[in-house]
Length: 139
Image 1 (tube, helix red, strand yellow):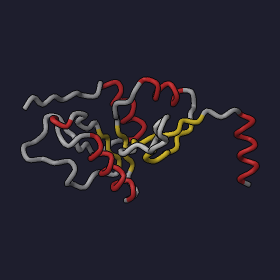
Image 2 (cartoon, helix red, strand yellow):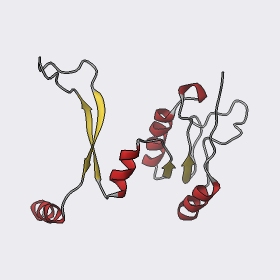
Image 3 (cartoon, helix red, strand yellow):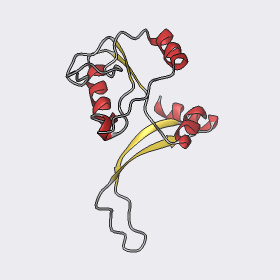
Image 4 (cartoon, one colour):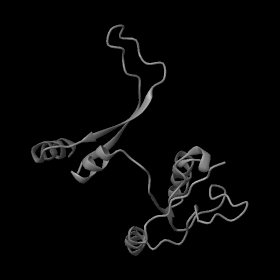
């Protein structure tokens, strides 16, 4: 198997570590023989640079699920995950994110829903006016 590991650049890790004071890494490199970061208790502040490809390990989804479990225990988790460049553009522009769930898009001609719904996220760039009106409506 052609396993491949990618290390976080030290300047990025150091910047994050100064903010979050990490005390655990479930994906250490080199990986100790027989070690499985998904089957151990994580620290109070965990940094996760998971394998991105299935052939390198369980993949990011397994680590995201574990991070959510650990977060429910009151822990802080920072994951670094690959995304498309347009995602970072939207985040840098201040987009609000909301899960749209698994959307079953409709075929344009038949109006039949897709057999396999795909997970989607809403990226919302609101004007200041829309934010103010929304805030007033929620009060």
